[in-house]
Length: 232
Image (cartoon, rainbow, N blue to C red; front, side, top):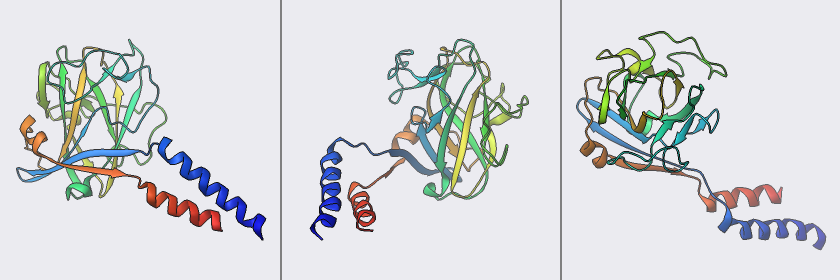
């Protein structure tokens, strides 16, 4: 009987010793209600996945380029030098009180030579996350084909046209992917915003005032779950 108890007890002790060294994924974003709708905001460097660390990379964190003065934290840029790739974000519009329907994608970006990219949205552009570059059409999927010499909240996608900025989002969690078209080290992505008010124009002040939200794994809850499994 004692031997049966020793194994679960030793496993729990090992788990407790590991806790200080374990990192738990934390998702941070902001929500707001401006204009006639809701917004969800997240910083470009808070991506969930990417195809490699050679194309879309952190400006400061991975040494690609120094963020331009005025950035909110780090930035994402394209260091691929002609290579193609993608970067993926998960976001939940229900956390902003939003519902399924047409939403506008807006980015705080610098892009002085209109080096644009493609935007792909799960549900609007396909029912399965692609493992190869989809067929993109200009202007339907193009974003940031604009001359943006300084930090600007850009809500159009192709020289004043909506282009790829308006997409039909689903209730709850959504997935967006940015795929390389022309972007380069000249491009810096700082903060992204989705708005259910298609006419809404963000400002830095709006972003600063937005309500912070955090999703994090609770170590105590994880310990309880682990102990329950060990006892089984």
